[in-house]
Amino acid sequence: MKYSISFEKLLELFPAANVEGNTEQTKFSGISALERATSGDISFLGNAKYKKLVPTSNASVILLPHNYTGSPSHNQICLKIDDPSIVLACLCKFLEKEFASSPPAEIHSTAWIDPTAKLGERVSVGAFSFIGKNAIIGNDTNIGTHCHVGDYSVVGESCQLHPSVKLLTHCEIGSRVTLNAGVVVGSEGYGFDTVEGSHEKIPHLGKVVIEDDVEIGANTCLDRARFEETRIGKGTKIDNLVQIGHNVRIGHGCLIVAQVGIAGSVKFEDGVVVGGQAGFAGHLTVGKGAKIAGQAGITKNVTPGAFLKGNPALPFKLSQRISILQKRLPELFNRFDARESKD
Image (tube, rainbow, N blue to C red; front, side):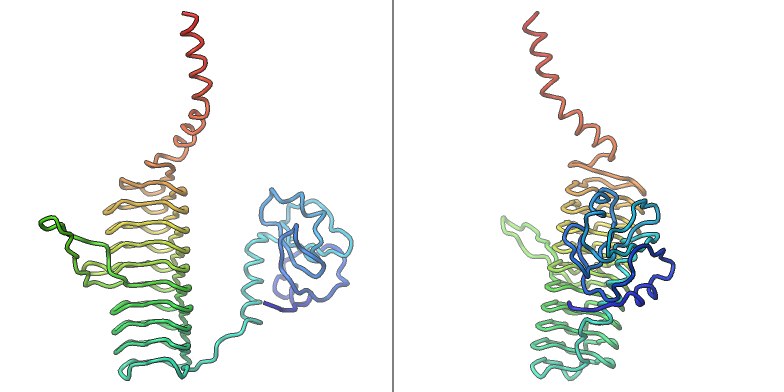
C-alpha cells in the first residue's frame, strides 16, 4: 500500500509524543523494521532486545518508549511515547482507513442472490458469490469474491467476509466480524458411531454463532454443533488454520494462535490465551484467564488463571524445571557410570 503522511499529521495523531531531532523532513511514505528501514520510513522500538539497532537505523522517524536514553541520529526524528507498538497499530489503522481502497457498495453482476434474501444498506457482494434463501445481511457489510452465505444464515452490520469464505446454512454472525480468506463456518462436525464394524455418520443439526467484534484467520474451520450451537464469544481473536470442533464454546476476549485444535464440547471461559499448535481433548473446561503454551497437550480441566506447558501439560514453572533437568541427564548418567566402574 502506497501512502504519504506529513509530520504535522503525525503530531496531530500523537499529541502526547515528545519530539527530538531534525524536523526538516515533512513527508514520510513507508513503515519498516529498524534494520531494514530507509530514508522516508517510519520505524519503532517495540521490544527492548532490539534497542541496539536504533542508532544505526536509517529510518527518518522512530517511535520510542519514554525510557529510551539515546539521541536521534542526523536527519532523524524520535517520537517518545508510552507504548510504541500500540501507537504504530493506531498509525496503521489510520493509514488503512485513509488510503486503502474500499469496495463500492454494489452487487457484482456475477453474484447470485436468492430473491428471499434480505440485504441492508450499503452492502457489497463480490464476483461469483452466493447468498442463499432467507439469508439476512446487515448494513455496511462487505462480502468478497467467491463467498457462500447459506440458507437462513444471518450476518450482522459492518462485517468483512474476505474471498472464499463459506458460511453454511443457519449460522449466525454478529456485527463488526472479520472472516479472513478461506474460513469455513458451519461445516459438519466430526462424529461417527461404529455399528457392526462400520463407521456410521452422526448428523449434525446445530449451528455456529459468532458474537460481535470477533476476528477469524484464514482457513480456520468452525464445525456446526451436533445439536444446539457452537459459539465464539464477543471480542475473541482466532488465528489461521485453527480447528474448532462441534459444540465448542469459546468465551469473551480469548486469543487463539495458529494451528490449535479444539475437540468437541470443550468450553473456554473468558480471557483464555492459547499458543500455537496446542491441542485439547474433548469435553474439557478451561478456566477464566488461563494461559496455554504452544504445543501443549490438554487432557484435563484447567483451573482459572493457570499457566500450563508441555504434553501432557504441567504448570509452567514445573515444566520449565523438568526441561532444564532433562538437559542434565547425560551428565548425570556419565557420573553414575563412572561411579559404577569404580565400584
